[in-house]
Structure formats: C-alpha cells, structure tokens
Image (tube, chains in turn orange, cyan):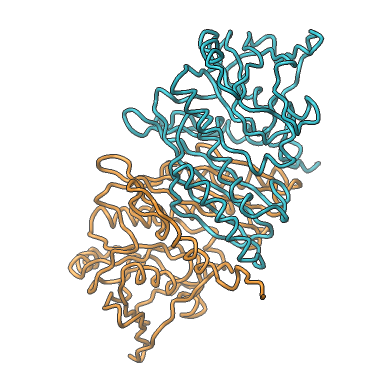
Length: 301
Length: 301
C-alpha cells in the first residue's frame, strides 16, 4: 500500500480533516476555521484566541535581522485579532532554539517582540523555551472584542462590496518581515461601519477570498483594474497567489461601502462584490472578459 | 570578542533575562514565572493561560507511538493548569511537520490529542500548521480557576509541610509519554484544603522545589527516607534531577497536612517542610546526616 504523506493532502486538506472531528461546548462561539477562536467572556465581550508558528527557512531566513523575525512572529497574531475586529491583550511566546544560537540573536528576536507588544499595549505573560534544530517561534495570543464588533469570515452577503486595505503582492521582497498589522484600520472599520465579513490576507488574495466565500456560502466577482498592486508586485499573480501581505480583506453592504468611499480614507479600496454562490469566484479582466478563478494560494505542504 | 551562546546562560538564565524586562497592566494577576499566567476574568474566576512546546529528538523520538506523542503534548499544559488549581477549558494546537510526514503519523498524533482533550472536556478551538525540519507541537491552553482556589509557586510559608503526589524518577523509561496529568488530585486538594503553594515536577524534584523556594523566599528540609521513588527510578538522583515526572509538588500548613494525612488517600506523600530562607534547601539522608542541595535539574540548553 502506498504511504500517504501530509503533502498529498495539503495544508488545508489536513486542517479540514481534523476540523471535521471536533465538537465544542456552548461556550465556544466559533472554534477552528476563522482567524481566531471566539469564546464567551463577559456580558458584552468575547475572548479571541489565536496562535501562529514561524519556522526558520520557511517563514524567515537565518540571515534576516533578528528584531524583524521577532516582530513578524507577533505581527501574525495581532493581524488575526484585528481580522476579527478585536484588540490584542495578552500573549505567550514558545521558542525553539538550537543550542548554538548566539545570545545576541535571541536578544534581538526578543527585542522585536517586545517593541511591537509595547506599541500595541499587549501583555507578555510568559512562554516556553525548548531546544530545536531550527529557530521556531509560536505566539499564542488573547484578545477581546465587543460582541457588537465581532466579524467572522462567514458573514458575507450577496450584494456586499469587497474591499482590501493597502496594496498587494511582492511581500516576500521585505514587507512580510516589516508589515504593520492593520489593527487601527480594523477598529476604525468595526467602530464606524457594519462589516459583514473580514479576513487577513496571509496566503494570497484568491485563497483568502475563497475562505470567505466558502464560509459564507457565496460567490464573488472582482475587477482586475481595481486590484491595488504594490510597487514590489511583479504582476497580478503576485497579488492573487503570493501570500504574506497581511492586509485586511472585508465585505460590507453597498450603502455602507458608499459611506466608506465618501470618507476618502487612503488605503481602503473596493475590488469587487459578493454574488450568488453559483457564480463561484470570477475575475473581470482589463478588457472586460470574464474568467473563473480557482481558490489556490500559498500552502505549507 | 567571544560569542555568547544561549547554552552559556542556560534555559532558566534566558527566561530570567527576558522576564526582568517585562511590565504588565493590572489585569494581569501573575505574568511569567509560574506554571500559568493568571488574568482577570469574572468576579469569582481567573483565566489561566499556558503553553508548552515539544520537539522531536528532544521530548520524544520519531519511533514513539504517534498517539502518545500527541497525548504528551496536551498533558503538559493540563498539568500546568492543574498546578495552579484550575480546570482546563480551551486549547490551540500549533504543529510543525516535515513535508514527508506520513498522514498515518499525523492522524495518530491528532488522535492522541483528541482522546485526552475529550477525557478532560477541553475544547479544541483551532491551531496552526507549518512546515518544519522536525515534528514540533506547541499547545496553548486556557483554563479557569475560582479565585479562592488559585495556587501559585510563591505562597509557601515557614512551617508548611511539603507533599508530592505519586512517585518520582525513571520517567524517561516511559512514564513521560503516558503520565496522567494530576488534575483530579489538584482539584481534590484545592477544594478541600488550604494549599499554600504548588508546582508540577517537570524538571526534577530539586529544581522545581527550588522554584517554589525562590518565589516564596523560603528554605526547605526534605527527608531521604520519605521520598517516594518509582519502580523505574535507578536511585535518588533520578527523582531529584531526572525530570518529566509531572507529579504535583505542594505545601500546606501543618494542621491542614495532618488532616490530609488522616484521609489516607493513596498517592499523597509528605517529604519535608518549609523553613526559613537562610537554611536554603537541605536533605536529611537515611543516616540522619544533613546535606545542602543545589537547585539543579533538567535544562534545555
């Protein structure tokens, strides 16, 4: 019998495989399958719970500046909390380090984490240290979100306008280590608009939009000439499938979208709209031609 | 200038180095430096937050039964929650996997985690998957504890009797993969006695007792003939410095200790008493001779 490897299922196949088996109790508002888990907390707030692991040679290189490595580790989880509309509050840092790691390097990583934690007023409340072959950092984070501000991937509705923050593509040239988690933007959105769905773009626009569509049982049409390409992006594919942009992708009702556009805030761009599920995900290219897209993007396996 | 490595500071030197730099806000009852972080939650409860990372070739071997690997990953965090007197409630699993990992192996690991989570009614609410050189599992866990039942390492008082659960030593021969986290015992203790301090023995009795003494500003005398050695332990050193027993080490006032002893519950053994800090940590051996011990034990670097 042939041996099946995790690579055969792929990252999302594997996640789906595990997710199907899980039952949770009524204190869990949302378990696996969103940017954060959502747990009952107080009469007006939910607890958000998320973790992100980064590994040397996969998510960063040994020669990257240690401070930026630490910064990235924390940024990923902050971005997850932001995508649910919440505010990050507490974190634990698990670190796996080779025995011969220079103290200077660990100090740098730690300084990167600490600086960003201070900027966002996140309490570092502990962690775990282990020996490992390659530097591995897993950050677990708790955040709080007012019940009325919680946004999930599953709330997109037909007629919603799809927006992104910032610009997309070419993140691997540097942005992936230096991006600023869109916490301020996310809070501005949930406090002033009715946001129906939101996700942070970690695995490319198309795959992450695919997550919203799947969870919301919806389809989407996006317009090539509306996609905000970054200066570092080689082409549209970079934005579609590149990953690690950590911009926000969100949808809101048309009237709300109009109000958002009239604010003329820089960095919020409409790129398309939510349609019936049967249309799947379609791109209207610059010549007005329609093209069906497949939800693929970065995957670890 | 000579390059300083993490191995030169050691695991606890490194933790101490980072810990000193941290400030937390008043919602944090206890940050780094105990089995769990303790965070304000409700009028009568605290939130407990902990994480534990295990790595192939350090904490388990590739040939170990996958189900036991998963089991161990979860057990460590349950043990931490137990040591604070709480009840585990939610967990996230971050997993780093080599690309060529057999699906069967991951399924086994996952099954081990799931079975134990079900046994302890812990909600698995998500996680993260990453590619890595060696199998790496980081579990982050949330628990709840009634304010009146919270136990920290720092509460030991002069005159307290020191107890351990179960027996110590030789864990590496198998127990470290199969131990049952002492949750039931911990709850029995906090619900029925005034426990002044508690820790789980992960790095050897002496090092972990050392943590209690340091945090409590206290000393201790323990008696060789009272130490419950496991059948697997080669000698006293195994129990003192071996690590991974995951038994509970706790202290309680003398009158409470008497009441506990009179219950004749199996598996709770007095091993010594808390004394003034100036005595440090001393052992009375089988011949009645006094010996000063140094707080050493397992360290990752």
